[in-house]
Length: 191
Image (cartoon, rainbow, N blue to C red; front, top):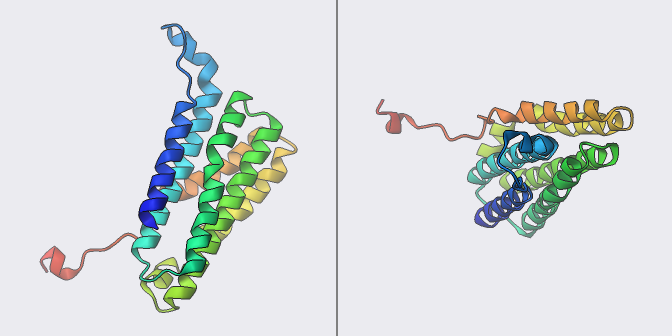
């Protein structure tokens, strides 16, 4: 499951970078028109990187999976697979209202799918599992969908405020979540 998910996310990033069109002349001014496309790509690259990082650590702390978990993982990958589309749409249209709102909806759906996957894995692992102890109250995981909802609502008023909300979520998660990173044992440290 981990290798398959890693492959899908790598392909999604590749698809997004292929959408960056090469300018037809060699002056730096040729890059001016690509600003919104590049910023959309950068934002989505960060989000996909965050999902990959957290997914990787979550699965490292997972001892057992079942059919429900496999389907929940596919559900997450479905929403992530829409990132290249909404990224391109938003960038090509210079952050117009409808693409920005749609981007937030896809972000929200991916966050909900990740939350479902996490809850199914926690149910399978049990309340005393390494993963359950590491996740704890999961404040960031619960706050992110709320911030996405706020961003989507703001998008109907001001697209830049919506983008700001999405960026806040990225910043919250940008610093890797150390709860799931493996810590060396005293034997590994040499103590």
